[in-house]
Amino acid sequence: MSAYDSPSTERIRIAIQKSGRLAETSLKLLERSGLSFARSKDKLFWYGRNLPVDLLLVRDDDIPRLLLEGMCDLGIVGQNVAREKILDARRSTADDDLDELATLDFGHCRLMLALPEQQAYQSPQQLSGARIATSYPQLTRHWLQQHDVEAKIVFLNGAVEIAPSLGTADAIVDLVSTGTTLRANHLRAVETVTESQAALYRGRSTLSSDSAALLDKVVQRIQGVQQASETKYVMFHAPRAELAAIAEILPGAESPTVLPLEGQSDRVAVHALCTEQVFWGHLEALKSAGASAILVLPVEKMLV
Ligand code: ATP
Ligand code: ZN
Image 1 (cartoon, rainbow, N blue to C red):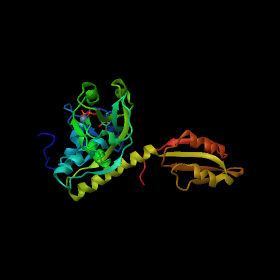
Image 2: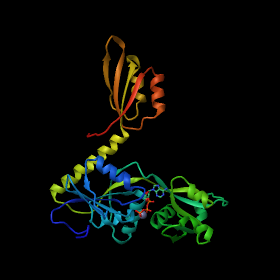
Image 3: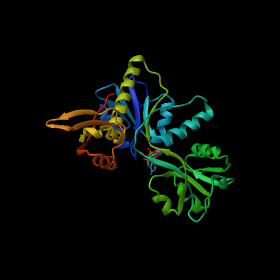
Image 4: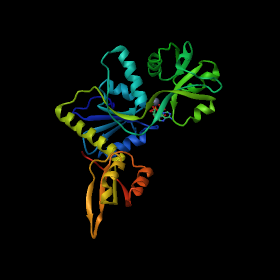
């Protein structure tokens, strides 16, 4: 039986990248969500050990199609890849769409327009009639349309960044995270076409009500792990009189817990769950407001 055939009892399938930039973090996220898999040698299909939830390990480019065709129920893939395939699918079927359930805060990159270094750039309008090489024709076309520019898109499956020096394109639209590849090819990024990070998508499969309930539970756990990794538990001592000012500093905190300190009437202990990133700047601001003994602790799991 191939990994894509329907098994007799209904099981949920999650597709992740087999190897590459997203592979390891995607798997870790699922394992931290309490899923465990029997790793098989062929590395294409891993059977779920503790729940009827199996893993498909595939090329990232195949994930949107597997979701759209209902071959898998959930998938983790870059927004860049998912949005490109969604736009492409929409050209043939009006309602082909994938639900983005959560952004996952890894695999950050930008799809950017880049020009040869020596070329001046003023606005998208100067691209009128230009040849733009890209592996993302739909996202590029969409961006050009938004700016009311007509240009020729040259589709390339890889090595997009060498197209200008080969003379096959005047500009490129490609993924950039550090800009090193662009610099090595004497290109300069001038516009962000779209920002991207890994995200969790729901496919178009239909499930029995039991399986749908299990899928909801898995999604909730993934969201919980995701939220927990951004959330910190912050504890410190503070002057009672400064509590209002201090509450303003805490990023993404709801009403903090305030506890008395033995033998001190003017100072209290404060515990708060911060759902947004806590930076050194926040801690310094707390200290300036009179806080002391400041501790920031990671949160492992969360169910809200
Ligand atoms: P596959 O063999 O699965 O097709 P790939 O070569 O297409 O792999 P990777 O290079 O592993 O893909 O990138 C996967 C995803 O990682 C990208 O689609 C993008 O969402 C994200 N990503 C993050 N940073 C970068 C970057 N600097 N360059 C390319 N992709 C990046
Ligand atoms: Zn790929």
